[in-house]
Length: 434
Image (cartoon, rainbow, N blue to C red; front, top):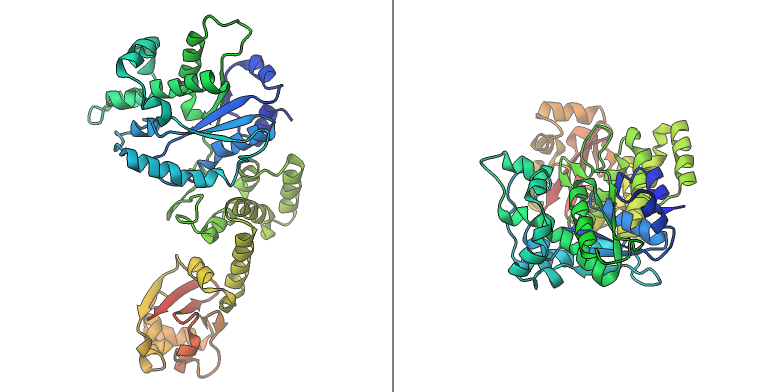
């Protein structure tokens, strides 16, 4: 399938430049495209995954992808989507963030073989430019009249409290120069980005045209391909939760929390997310959607999505661990979880700290302990829940006439430090003992 058709059916094609000329240009393999990544933090979110995925589709279509790390532009900061001036980072911070982000790319792209991905850092050329040379050789081609019409600039110009500095105003020139540099040095003819970068892409193409004014008309100058800024069916931003962003590296988002994010995708979004985020082919995705419609309660689409994405970034072993943990959690037998997974699974549930010296004594009786958690509000309520069998210890219901007399002991500790209490089927509370 032609790369543009592939992106189209997946809903990942928003805008292109070049029209039929671009399509014809891509009929031949071995074309080079780049996508830039802004090193403001040391990891990437699942929203950042979309441009990485576009580079992988590019690679699968027989072309060569370039990952451009913004070690130079990161010292300036892209004003796009920002209503205030960015905090300038030091060179050391930018380099640290560049190294941190590189972890995600190796999970998706191939760095060996005929169409091996290439990583470049624009600090290697931008930081060597001389100010006067840039003004004379690059700046003269940029119209301020056009630049101030860009949304990211226009919005800030009308905000007198914030405004925009010349530093951020010059970002468009720097990004355009990146495209020109890669066109000159690596025969890179395509820039891939999110739709918010379309103006910067066009500026780069215009700069390339001016640079190649003496070249034959038949020689392809450059073009851009953008993806839509993907959102959920309710308009919510992808990868944002009440607890914050969902990251691609396990030092920021655990494999279990990552897996859970995809499992909790709504039915309205599941099919589209399979197209956007996985590499499953059209026939497979449509088959999954059909099965999902027949038995929606089994959430086949969400399970496939969660397994595919977790496998991609965290490996099959973590997929298995996450599925085992989910079965243990909802089946009640949490005693099978190892210490690491137990911590991950219950990282977000309410928790309380206690001393082990209480275990076996009156202070560790459930009647005394439950009101100190979020599971009940009083001793009377604790007795009521215990009598009707609503309380579980480590997934095992507390039943019988002596339930109200139940006392926690060292034998209840999981991995020597945790006892999990549950009311009903879903309301958990973790007690930590030290």
